[in-house]
Image (tube, rainbow, N blue to C red):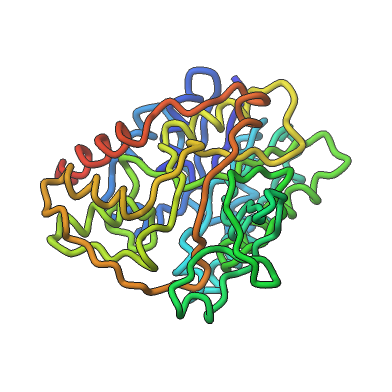
Length: 357
């Protein structure tokens, strides 16, 4: 059996991917088991071990340890999931994000070159690399959105605008037609991961595949990490009796994709006969406002329907509208989402009610 080596493989996405891969590959995870992510959340580690995965504890910042791990297992496929996540946290910990996301990817490149067995590298990138994402002007033509300006925010105008101040209309984002424009430290480091992998293996037999994911959610996402997915944060806050704080006017739009669908997308990318040269957008292809999804979670958890606050606040790096054009994933990978938002929310809520062991 060929070996798949997954950085961050004992975590939220990696543990599910291991379950899908284990019947066809030997799976080895390289994971630092960061307490912020894994603390009080044993489900993912247990899921990984139940699938038969082998764990090597290590940090991608440790070049020697990473090279030794790859040399031990000589993988054919590497899936790079290990990453610092969270737009807000990246603003406060610039060095840490660059060390893990950029430096860790550089270390992985050198380890892959040294081992010589790898034929395919798959990266978990993010829709954050687009900034505001794809937009059109009043005439329906594509237009580039710039980072939202404090003057507009101050008067409650949260919509994206172009460089001249013209108000734009968001549309589904596709990697081929939408230019990258990262608006946060986190987003910039994710884009640099893409650049490093694309450039490091140019002209070699090593293929590189990139998935740009929308907001991933589901059972197993840490409820204790204040920088994890917004839905997990909302669930924890509701259970603690807190009022949900919604930024701006509550109508920021997101595209939520369940973790099981993301794992299936990586499986498809691992096994597609020809790796797409372009990045592939992974999402549900559908939008929901944070206000709407908050109300759904409050209802599911039996909380008062008005237990939220519209703050009007704006966080640097936040974007207004996010939704993926998933047509390339359908045509190139034969992939489409299978878990609806409603079903995924119900599964997240039911899982959150089970006490951690």
